[in-house]
Image (cartoon, rainbow, N blue to C red; front, side, top):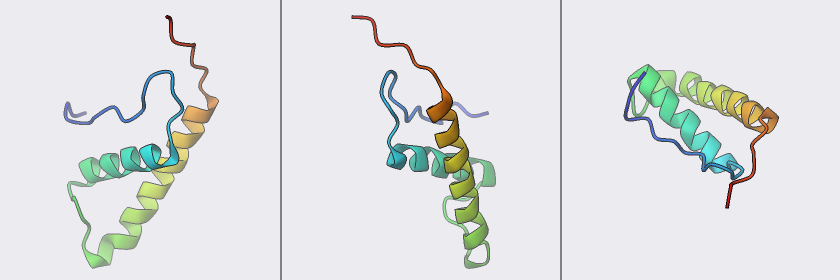
Length: 70
């Protein structure tokens, strides 16, 4: 999709709720094309961020991550 999207989850570490929300916000900003929505679109923008954060948390919670070698 885009090379500028950063990895916000650290390998072998649990992603925090803040990291998950930041990743969701980054995704919604990228896909919508807006850094900040207009007042008319603010509730739709925030709802999308929450939906993506919820789906991301569900994904992360269901993944099996191997322990770091070392």
